Length: 295
Image (cartoon, rainbow, N blue to C red; front, side, top):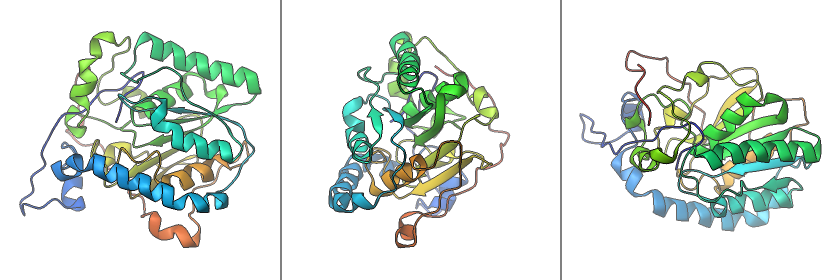
């Protein structure tokens, strides 16, 4: 799910189309609506199926791209903790990376402990290794990751987000808003929608991994504007399964394997091309993208 030291949440919205059926193209035209009800209701089951794919693919993990073993921190999504990111961190450690959870318990949004804790963690890992740290954020955790990169670009090697709606313009584009708002009285950072900080690209390489089958946030809210060092990678996973889906793990490993100071766009190996649909392009801002109040 979503949330971080600066993110709004979603609301429950049922998308209806003229044909009575929900197709990707029709949903794309309704950017003010959240994921369809069928996608939302099937999230838990599809996440379990994604974990089954992860277990089945473990014998192939030895073929994952390997890098220099630098420090990596993984931030969980809304209402999640380090248990949710254990599979991903386990894979990264086996690849030789110094992978860490955030160690702050359950993510209930930008509380004082969350804001201070993530900044202190980044500083500590940076000081210990003497090198920039890769920050991976799942859903709301990705909002926090991008926030850290904007605040301390010299300490961040790159940012990788998983189903993070950093282009959220309206609460109706997410089905997690009500949950996020439930803890708003504990938040020390409040923002308006769309996020003004996202008007400018990050100063570090950024990769957004997203899914057209996301049942929590509208997939278009996860699209970054492609540039010299930023890209979008599409996978066929559930929102709750992005952290352990084999295609997402491969994409993360590939991005981490790039030598420090270099960056090239993601290109899946030939035998994995079917697992990576062609990524969509972000839609131009429209009249509906007016600022609204965030919790």
